[in-house]
Image (cartoon, rainbow, N blue to C red; front, side, top):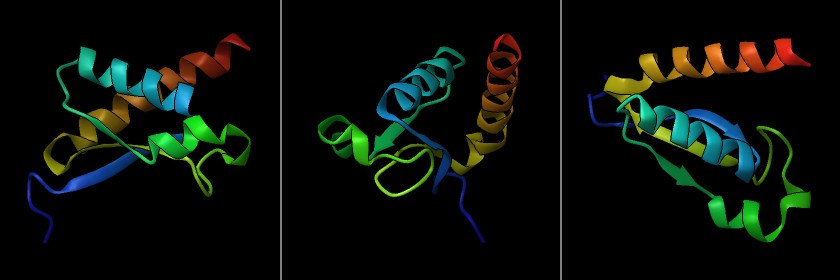
Length: 82
């Protein structure tokens, strides 16, 4: 059974997108960290959205549901602007 502080990946993408999502979540008071950020910076051409080498945004289990809702809302608004 997951514990409240277990890390959960809530987003994967390019370094730029992951840093934006990180800022978005931290603006709502959710503590985040990035995993594989160096790979996304050193070799961005290797990154496939959500694929090998993608930068991952990590939050604690207790914040994961809120974080996913915030991300879904942001992605929906971004997609509607295109």
